[in-house]
Length: 384
Image (cartoon, rainbow, N blue to C red):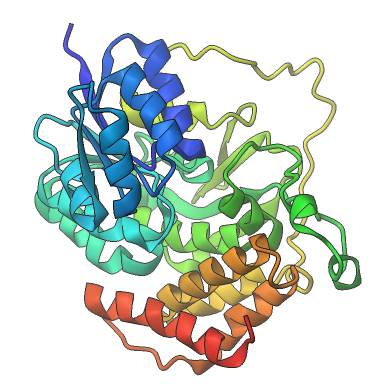
């Protein structure tokens, strides 16, 4: 039996750990490399279970400690950006799952593409900020980029075998998050714990906050633009509170294809890892006799400003999506640390975008400089 060999960037996070769940049940997948920022307790567990050739740790001090802990194993430890790139380009790996959070995932993804690794993409920032670099490079290298986000996987499944010229519109669904139906006055005193209570999905902290602000839908629109070569004005966001329909595609004849299923991230993860094959996945199934209703709403863009701010950044193009993304990352970090209120997230993003002068057709250095500038703009105006 030929095994599919996998490298996982962000193996200790929500997507990474669920990817390992899929590997456990597969019988024909092998983990060659794992990588994380600094959670060496979980990395050590993964090393002892999966015996990868390489484990990379972003934090160099944490990498040194992990080296001592696992010196009785054959797994080699590397650190920093060099370590992430080594994990992403490891000889023998067939597919790289890019689930590491933040813009630090861009360089490893680019290097993986240059080494002709198939990309299972779960890092939104890669296409949001550098889609104009990533997609041409993937075409040049003949590399497939397979979406792992449930929304983009749904679209990918719906358009499989279809002529792209027949696609009229992409419809990205949103749950509405934990604060759906609330108004601005209701959100002034919400706490971290409230924002982390997502009604349907089990996700990492950062993306759960992004769901609450609806920043995640803006990021998904920007990502879909590049993944599916679709103009922004032909990508729609609708709220589907039950999280049963994961996204839809409308065709020129008026037909709409929807991908449905229970909210379980293992499904899009497994589909990316086994594409173009489908295989059995243990877990719950939709019970249509028990399912009472599937409803839709327009997103409340007056209250949840993450979506319109992101669309504004996407229309501005150039370095502005990188500023939007970086400002959001910084603001979410401050919110999770208890330094700002929930609504301050929007104000921080607005502050960074207003201060930025867009550079069109940016290279990677320009994108990373815009990230740094966004943080500096916020710090110069906020007492954090």
